[in-house]
View 1 (spheres, rainbow, N blue to C red):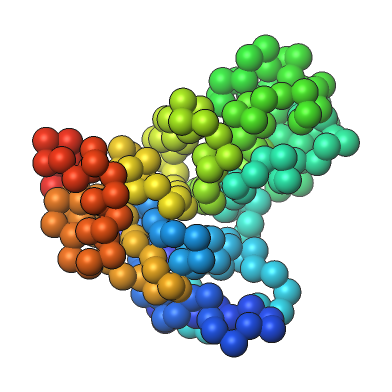
View 2: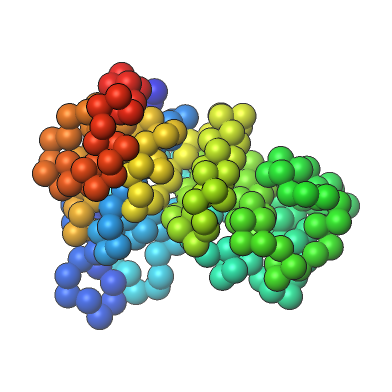
Length: 259
């Protein structure tokens, strides 16, 4: 795999804060891979995701560089972003169809009818029950898991090459979490996309990620192929994360080291 983005000495400090949220991150995002960014709350993983997508708030001070192999990407067109809480990211007064079609119409130049057809296609792809009916529904009429599927559909409607999912399962129960992860895995494989999956749950990421990057206190403490990191973590913090999940700490359940 070749590098889609080479990140060098990336640092981010928010307005009014004295301590940076990110401190000198060096990391390559490889084209076509599924990379999991893992860390506890406050580790800087969401700041990293937003910096990658160009979605940092006004006033954030950014140092370092992001070098893209495809030229400067556009959020919404080249980069799809799935936020943690679909209730916050979806507009309560717009229909599901309008929201899924919006990105495709804006970035692909589709007509209203074409946008509606694209929205229907995407709702089918994310396995929304009765997608034709869902086009005219509003977010509050759907379950939490269905709203997150809609958010994924909207993020992918303009056919981006990179999908960033920032804690997309944290507000969901364990069964729905597994369904959303399986859906993301299915969609990125079908579309030949790159996935950056942000999570605090190393066990959740271990089931599908090609590589993991472990963040702590705004720093990257370890990165590598998922199986190798799980089998032989180099950082004490990574080992502690693994030990906190008994299924990961049990050798027979550790994924193949070559993955």
